[in-house]
Length: 117
Image (spheres, rainbow, N blue to C red):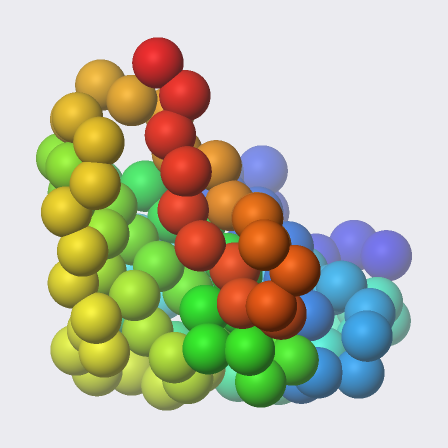
C-alpha cells in the first residue's frame, strides 16, 4: 500500500473499531485517516492540535476505537472522537522532557499515558 508522502508523520490505530490497525498521516494539524490498508484517499480528515505537538493514538474511553491525543510540554489534550474540535480532557502528566508511552496498564480496555525518564 502506498499512502501519504515522505514528509508526513505516520500514526497507527484502530480508527473504526474493527479490530485492525490502519494508517493515518499527519500534515501540519491535519490527520488523514484510512480505515483499510488499500491505497487511495483518506476516509476522514480531522484537524486537531498544532503541527508542533507530539501525537499519540489510543482508545482513551474504552469504546474499541482509537482516537488522538496531542502533547504540548507536559500537557496532554485527549480527544474521544475522530472529529475536529477541542480536547475532551486535558491532563498534565510528567515533565516536558519525558517520553510518553501509551498502553492499557490495568486491562480495563482504556489506554492511558505513561512516561519514561
